[in-house]
Image 1 (cartoon, helix red, strand yellow):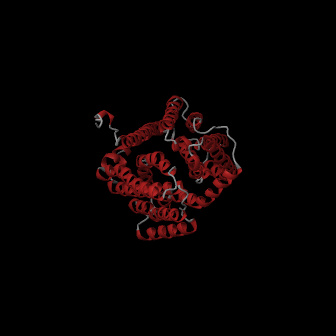
Image 2 (cartoon, one colour; image 1 turned 180 degrees about the horizontal axis):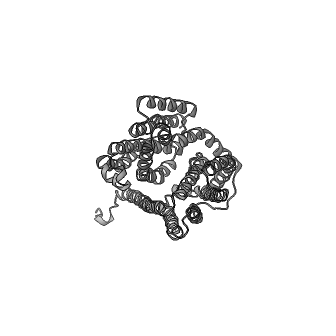
Image 3 (cartoon, helix red, strand yellow; image 1 turned 90 degrees about the horizontal axis):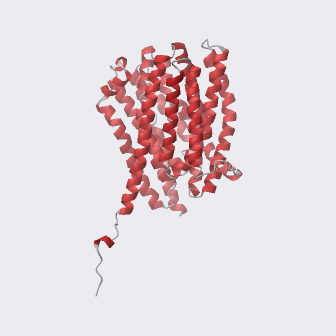
Length: 436
């Protein structure tokens, strides 16, 4: 007689899929929630600084914080992507990932030793040239460079965390550091309303983030591991191939501000700056995608069919995530303009253009992340001239003296890079077929 199998004994064929889906949704929720807290606290502290700091001190803080951001961009120069690309090859080996992270950190220190001295004269000129005392300039620059160096030291600890999808640990650290910064600003700035106090809050948050990420990453990569010359050389070669494009888009990303300052009036510059404050909202999709989906794509095996399937699905997810963030702005721009204040109520058309440009940029950033995660690099000698020519064409087509024209030029400028990264992804998969 045959045995009768009870329903309880029949394996649930859907459970592996359900488990992966639940894990994916959980990671998306963790990253989105952490970024939402970051957005809220950043907005609140930003308003506090505007209201509490005297005009000259807020201007000083604005310039110094812009310098801090620029230093971070220049000191990275694609190192995070290069480290991820190298670590993904043996991402389940703690010893190998430790060696890769150590090599990436060593190379980043070498880059900092080049970037920081070269940028110092520019920082001194920007600040001292505006009438600030040498003492104030020296202190805030010291704080900016110290904050940037600590940020660069901690920045690669999130590579093993993302490869292992330990997003709760990373987001917890980020939220705690943001809370520390907000607490420091609320506690110190009212009684000592200076740019120095505001930058001390930035430094405190970077220290908290450094120790938090260092401790969290210790489970997957030993923080005191030694670098490997061969890995260091491989990361350096990757950075060399991506450096021109990274530098180009670091500067061209500010084209709206440059055009507004050259061709537009004070009102136009203020409008561009105000609409740009919504960039954190637009960037939520990029944050979620870069933290959750790109590391999963990076650690796939060299299986052409699998990579092709996952690339298609991941690209659809990228479009869906970005649309979910951008569509509310396109439908109801007046509600978002209300967040900026009454002075921006007359810019619904410009905000829609800004949202469209953000949509194109987020697609570009996502495809760039997917391509570099697999080591597929766009040739800079091809992309940069085409991008420059396209920017010139846009300047000729649109009125650069109006905010709308500037936003069209800025937003559409990423189209060549988006198309190029889609192309290298397709070519990368085709090469996998030839190799395997």
